Image (tube, rainbow, N blue to C red):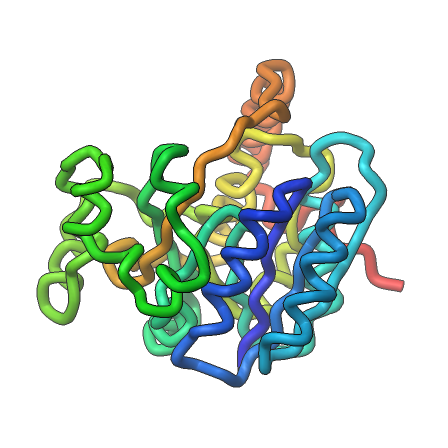
Length: 269
């Protein structure tokens, strides 16, 4: 039915919490592929331990650590996937129990789905364990705000359902871009644009992919108030401004040349 692709790099504790999030999904028929950008042995140990606790098929796709190469490992995971619909997220993003269900219910031909997240401060991130995920209490707006989550309109993501979620999705000023931590698409469309551009490092590499999908005619659809996730806080030592500038140049060039298929994407044997 669906393949879930989770990128990770040396965040084993956060990955464990994320996998608990998928353990308690309402949808049970899915495979999950951990796209590992060169983590050490502790990540492998987490995956092996969690394999004994979950009912879904849990795969581990790995590449050596040669710096931030998320696009390359995502492409490997795409080729490893066996389902016709793919959901993408990250190894620091916990899904609410209906996360996969929402993506499946809202999927449409000719569209990709664009979700968002609620960013947690470090202190709250460390308050969450399997119990909080299993009960769903960590997605409770009051519980989070009482523990220090800054009150914001964005927190409506946590308690919007039905008509309220529909209206907020429709009228949010946020664009329906491809957001790597919460997005989904048909595999055939992903393959048609040749996946992710492997030249790109951190900074807009997911948006570049979404822009090529749009040029193909696959339009983004906003679901940020329906597909709910929590983003766990951590350092980001992989952020480098020269990479941002290179990525911006690639995006500008691709827009000017109306590029749909990248020459630096999926490699078929």
